Length: 441
Image 1: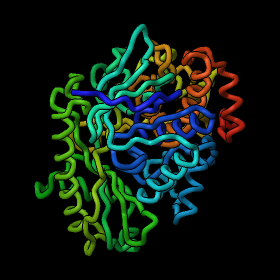
Image 2: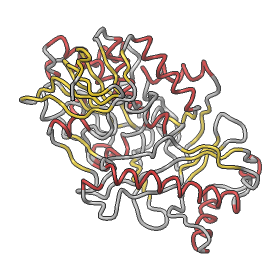
Image 3: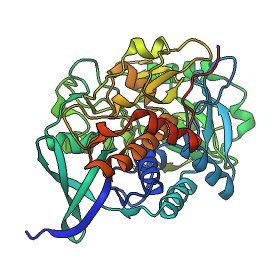
Image 4: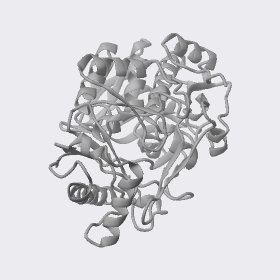
């Protein structure tokens, strides 16, 4: 099959989730010719296809301290310019969340990308990479019109699944090979909910009702501590309730959600569970009696698959100690939120000291085995536990902005990302409104 040449770009970003979109915007704003490649028909990844709330902008605990700015602020401002945005507490104490309409966010990401002069290519899957001695010089991308080849000075792997690093043969840890892989979730929304009726019970009673329903044998509810929350639309409530394991034999990396057969089964199982949870809500939860299931997430929510090996690997101890780093390019105060399988609850939470935040080192974004590749978002360099904290949406934006600035700088020095001084990246981030210093105790 013939492969059409698509062009050459200083920076190519693969994946347009919160991290990838931020990376492309930051790179293009920095003057680099930038291409953003996305498999879906819209930008945003999990932020538009699965979820409706940004967590991580604020620390949890007694004081809500803002720890993410920059492009993240531009995104929230864009949302407020279109419609209503709701700030609300997290069910499990993970801090203030910013709830939005995903349809609005699709437009916001596109507006910011266009304004930055980044080139966007939707409906495109990376099929292969051209790599030699740690340098990725090109990508082969599948499109409706056939295969296209793209030349790149610097590549940012924001695919979530470390697809570029996988194709290039760079090292990573597959979910489930050391620690149990986090489960997947299909989100859904219910309309015509009586908010006053729903407000008559709290989280603990909702969980009791879930457990009672599951024990009755009348409902198939694999998770009994799910949550529901208000949205900007009156009478519409969004949920995080379903639970799907990667596969039986979860420790086998080929059975995780990068395997198409596993992902297919998970997508269908997630929708089946959503219908069952909706039936439970209507039957047994106050406020839901006259409600209806009106929307399912566009794709299943995947929490982890591959995590690259970077120049530094963030650890659980780093997170829980709120460690600071000389090369940090962002902050995270979100707890370790580990969704695992098994009957009943299956989610564990571990919190940082109140009002603190861990630094996110630049070294976690630099792919260890590569010369001109950065990894950002949920596939960045971290252990299972640390990733379960720093994968929050606001942190993905912060990492993406740093990766985009670093990549644009590297494009000027033959793509060698390690030749861009960290203090230069940090200075540019601060001037763009990013927050790099941890809150005062």
